Length: 91
Image (cartoon, rainbow, N blue to C red; front, side, top):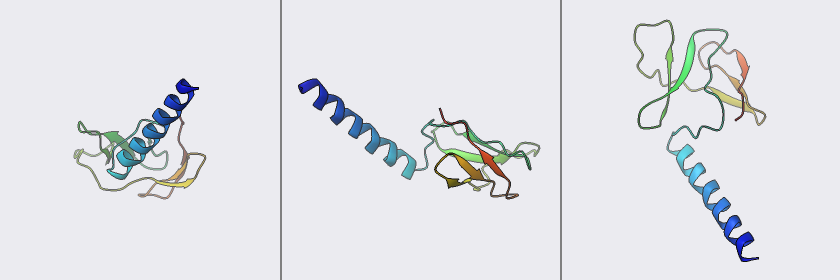
């Protein structure tokens, strides 16, 4: 019984920390990074763990500030640059 409570407490703490990381803009590695099939916008993870986007064909790899918008709980996203709808691979 004690082990079950410890596991439950640990799982709850992991959920809390994941939500906190997401609120800070950190990528929690729960899905593949997105690459738009309609344009060249791609996601990447900066060294500090934040999610960034840039245009793959561009010479400037600075963060555009654009973020793919999750439109369904099943991992469906909309590209903020061209509006294409794509499906993320959930890990």
